[in-house]
Image (cartoon, rainbow, N blue to C red; front, side, top):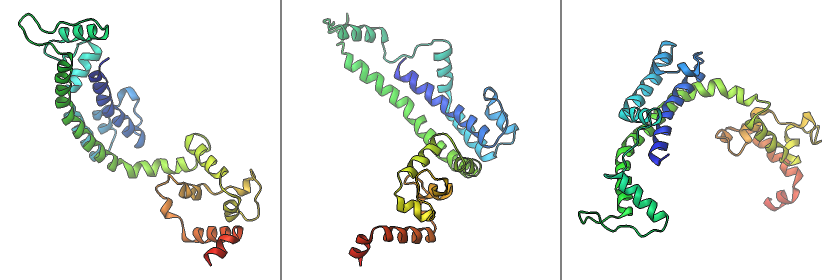
Length: 239
């Protein structure tokens, strides 16, 4: 599989994944095999989402047909003007065998030149659709973000297993006793359910949470007071 094959596979798959994601977020009830732009439109997907997905499909153009031809019919992509010579020279160079310096017409044969020419043609061919894809994805994410947060935010916050829940548990297990007392002064025993921080507050305190700036002022005061009692030296030095 060449780099062009990998690009085509991933490039085309992004749109398919976006359609499946739309089906999940808006709970359209389609099977994965039936997740197409036309089907999600019939099921009531927001017009803005359908519009940007349709643009992504139009931008793919002939690249989708090329992907299908390469993966489903075994069509080879032409990298250079003479791929057979390029492959033969590359194999001889890899085997450290002296290569022919020129062809029968006297033209110089250079593997690096062959490869550079092929790479440049791929860049010219793929750069434009890639940049267009990035812009379309940004628009797509901006449209679905409110619905995604509204539907899955509460589920993530209430999760009792999985990556997010495990990360929150680990973050809380390394919290100092002063931090645990700030939430539950009556109990400071490790592992005691009463000493666990509420899920929403922990999410706000998590260093990787983008909502960390939304911590309530009363919580700041509570933490400051508790830490000051636990570390009088710091309080004296600041005074």
